[in-house]
Amino acid sequence: MSDPDDLVAELVACGAGSWDQVARTMTLHHYRALQRYWARHPPTHLLIAAWLGIGPKPEPADLGDLLAMFGTAPIR
Image 1 (spheres, rainbow, N blue to C red):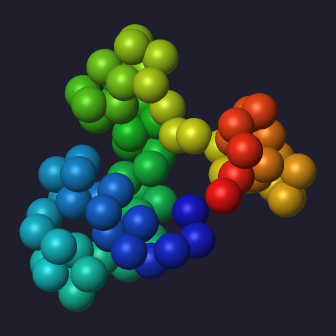
Image 2 (cartoon, one colour):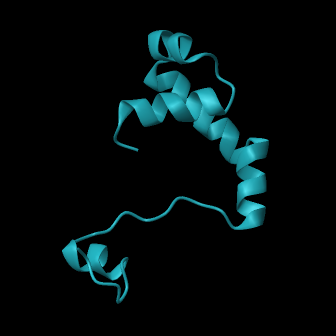
């Protein structure tokens, strides 16, 4: 996860506090401790998403992958 906002969003979604509270007080040490804990005890919304087969969509690696996402439909 490279975007700091994504990191804050993950922590807020997992119940670590409000956006402002997480952005102001969370340290990398705290984040790593939470990641270790969640590896053993995943948050409920992640368990349900995994059970339903819902996961992050891979980002296109290059222009060919991006064009393949459109299939045979013409791009205008």
